[in-house]
Image 1 (cartoon, rainbow, N blue to C red):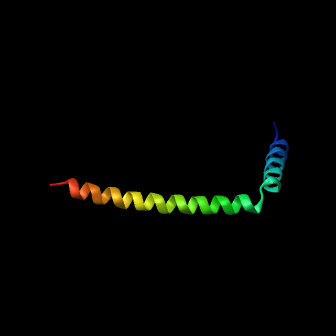
Image 2: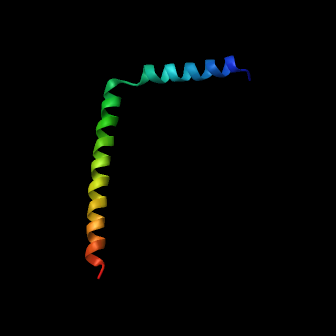
Image 3: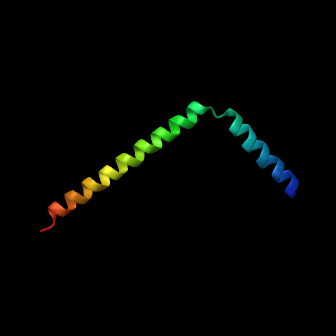
Length: 56
């Protein structure tokens, strides 16, 4: 397969993907990623505190 065909396939796929993604989906993804990051940070702090409490 030559470079023009690969470029056409990749370009068409990306363009059709971007046209089918709504702003609601993007906003939802941003909100869920933010919530996930905050929860992950809190759990890591909690686990660090628990490990310190268990060490003699």
